[in-house]
Image 1 (cartoon, helix red, strand yellow):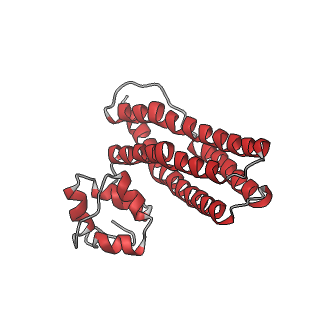
Image 2 (tube, helix red, strand yellow):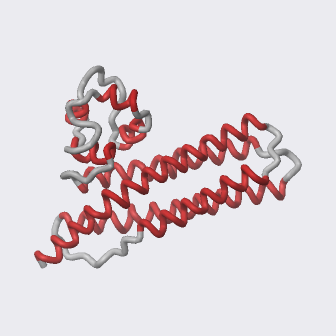
Length: 219
């Protein structure tokens, strides 16, 4: 496989050079404690498709498994919706100023709208797109499924950027360190979501389109 990292490279080197790989590992359900084993060895030990893991790490489409990529994306959705966003909201609610109820209500309300938009998008993929892809893989009859990843991603990224800018420009935080810590988490979440979107747009969508062409020709 082409890319910076190969199956023969050590997994510990990957993590040391690119700590964002920890999030990729967790979504492939790969735990720490692998010693000096190579990326290929660790993937095989965890029953993970090595080509798909490296496709995500290197952001290159090379013989990836659509099934493995769907498992990765499903775990990514679970991370955002059930851990990352609730954790940010909890921290945000704790650091809002006392005595500014209306402003605080507006801030949390904006965050809730952003979270609801992300949840709607990810639930659509889990409940509509993934079953559609599974039907294509089995070459079963299936109705076309709109694949509008890029447009939805742009809308969600825009709303997150707006929310971040509201806090930076207009919220007079009294607990500077605490609010800055929340903003740091939001910046990290934004970067992580952009990486997630890149996997969908640059790896998953082309894989689906390839399956659709194959399904059409076999019909």
